[in-house]
Image (cartoon, rainbow, N blue to C red):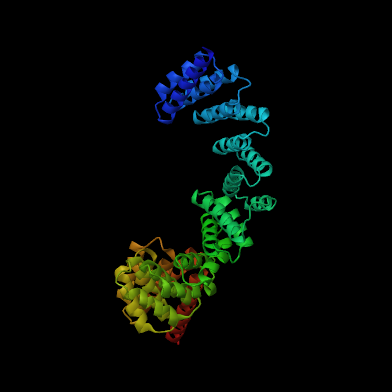
Length: 474
């Protein structure tokens, strides 16, 4: 009879296992329960398998309950370490991380050198890692690497620890630690890649301060590294966006100093903007020249040409300023604002070089497109040339337009009044001329050179009037 009972239990156990491996978990449960009810020698195995079946049936809460009952019922079972490991894993699956950590601790305490020890410590590290508890995770990963070198768990621990170090921009610490392990070799190229990846991650997440620190570290450690081009460009972009434009200059210069690449045009544009903001024409000009010749985007070429004409004008290189102004004017896509800037350069350069014929033409064209202060300037020169031509009344009419339409531009208003005084003097009305000049001298002290010009004109008129009066008396 006893042998029959043993064979019967063995049959139920085999039946349960056959159904289990065939993924027929409910029928397997029935067979395992028969073994458990018989309290046979294999009841602990059957109970463990029963708990596992609930997991495959997506009943993790029942699986957890059955595993905990198993641990109470069978404290000496050979499957106890399996049960503890499965219980910890199931807690993880159910997002009960604290219970999972405690269960793995219990497993490691009871089975210090068990087959699941390295796996459970690694699982603890992964639980901490997924909960963003990086320092606690690193403690576990380092323990696995130290206590179970060359194991698959050690290799996974090292790989995951690397992610933490990279995420936190601590590749140097990773390199220092990894050199203490004799089963992992890290090349300079891998450290180069890891250091760059750590910085790029911060940049892509818009963590500007961290990105600047880490790109700066990369450029310092790997000045000719695999990612030197991108690192310098992204570092420059980070400085620029953080209103530290001047700090970005060396990095943009690195980008434009290597063969033409995807970042060349933007780096040239940014460098030009910085040098122009700093009023450094000497540095801006070569950068703008390169931008003009290398740019793919039409707006960047226009930007380069319009600023080259301004830089050359500021340096009193009037011939080059006019060359670039005429390039701007020749582009049919140039908008009126930029065309006004170009036309005024042509006109002012003509005035500076004494080419009045060109100046007349340029200011006349400017009037057709200019607005605001440039329009006031163009109108002033209309009055100026009419005065020179002896068309005093027409000149006065132009001055009156300045007063009526552009009264907020006081400089050209004051200059126009001096012209008006000269016009009245030309019309033999010295009283009106001197009256206007006196008013300019009294009311436009904000413009010392205008006051000086008015005083010179007033002195000249008074001198001529004195001669006239003297000749009449004689």
